Image (cartoon, rainbow, N blue to C red; front, side, top):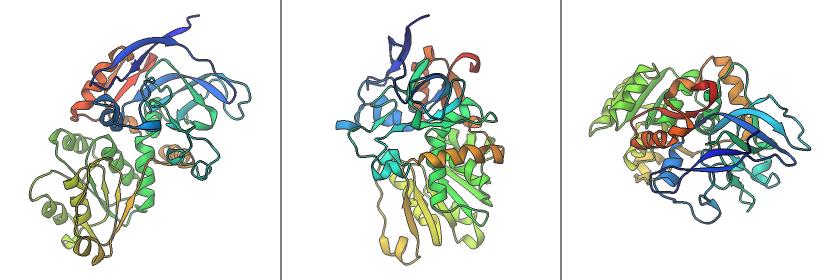
Length: 353
């Protein structure tokens, strides 16, 4: 049996570097996962692929890339308690210390311990045939969902679900989503499943607007321009705006649009990373009694809740995948994702090709 495998690394100059590495073996409390699908996140592009932006313990530490992994357990280390060989799993992409307040809440993303390590950043991720994971970081993937469904739950869909739950999206709401990359498309898909009765999207890239339209995720979609605020508000009852707005753009103008399109007493959630925003607190927020939430990733119990609800709703995140590549083509996969004109990009293994 071979003891080596090919793996993808991100040197930070908009390229992918392939290396031959040892196939890891699970220690106590660990499982070895055979990768089936590993999708590419926008944060990988922004903070690792183009350049290494992280500092100190949050810096990329020359590990195997990929923090949206899904696969099948092929070996369990000593003292595992729940999972077994053959289980299909999603891996929560942060491994926390497990004992701080945030970890006890399930929010390993917010763990401040030196032991905190993100898969694909500070410990090896899913851009290789095998990945070593902590059992505590695994979520069981139902048979009704595909590995490509699961890979997106690991980060993007989990992140969106958390944000939509914070602002309580329901059938009472008109919802505006600004920024229609994979996270924005996920926001539309989940808002629709949660019952939102009007869904409108905005992006600066026409190709992404077309993806949202072709997937049937929007009632109306607009390419951003000088009059886009008037256009999106005109879609709502008497032009009053949206009960709930979601910014996935990470862009100053996108966030301004979401804030100003939110109706009186409405709620907005910021999910998109990076960028800045400027607004006038009194007319934009205070006088209209609006509430702004920030939402960063999710907790592990909500990921478990999400996979159950995806089955109940009969929806598949895989529908957002516009391009699949083999591991040998990972350089092409990252290059395409970097262009920002596609939906979700995935590296898939074995029978998924």
